[in-house]
Length: 113
Image 1 (cartoon, rainbow, N blue to C red):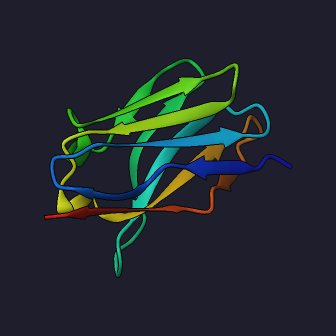
Image 2: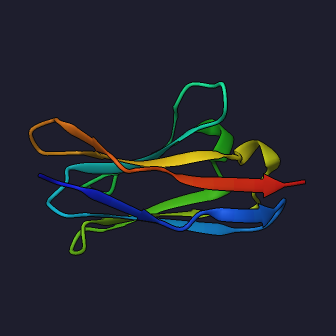
């Protein structure tokens, strides 16, 4: 059973930076980050597959960078120039080679104005 362990997150002022990490306990096809603000749906932030193909949500392009260490089955999300509207619970997501998915427990990111 593949499990995901997230780290990072916290409280930061607007314009600041945070880095999220997510380690998987097995081999993964694609990994990514989603976020959910109070009262809103969970939205995709960024995803990267085993070939290094990346997709970002328009709202984070130019500010967030996703990267992956395939040897460690770990994905990172570097978040720069954070805005109050980036405040949300961030969830790591993994797509396994059999197309099943796993979710991390979520980590809170709060950006104060």
